[in-house]
Length: 134
Image (cartoon, rainbow, N blue to C red; front, side, top):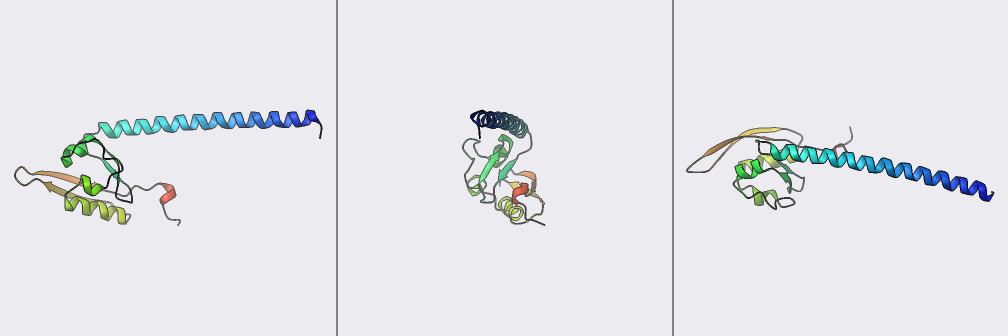
C-alpha cells in the first residue's frame, strides 16, 4: 500500500467522521429544542401534570400540580412520590397505572373543611424501549 493511498483513506475516514459529528450535533440540537418546547408546554398548562417513573419517583411536575397538591414546586424531581402526595386514593391510582397498562380515571376530594374535588387521570407512559416485545 502506498503512502498516497493511505493518506486518501485517512482523508476519507476524516471526512466521514466529520459528517457523522455534524449529523449528531444537529440531532442533539433538534432533541434539545423538542424537549424544551415540551417542558414549556407542560409548565404552562392549567391542568396539573406529574410524571412518575417506575420507581415511584417524580420525574416532572408542573406548578398547577403542586398547587393542587398543596406543596412547594421546588426540588421535587427525583424524590419519591409519597413525599409529594399524601392522598391515599391518588397514590393508589398512580400505583395501579404503574403496575399495568390501563388508564385509571377517578375523582379525588382533598381537604376536610374547605374541600376541593379533582378529576384525575393516571396513565402509564412508556417509551418504545420499555415496552415488552409482542
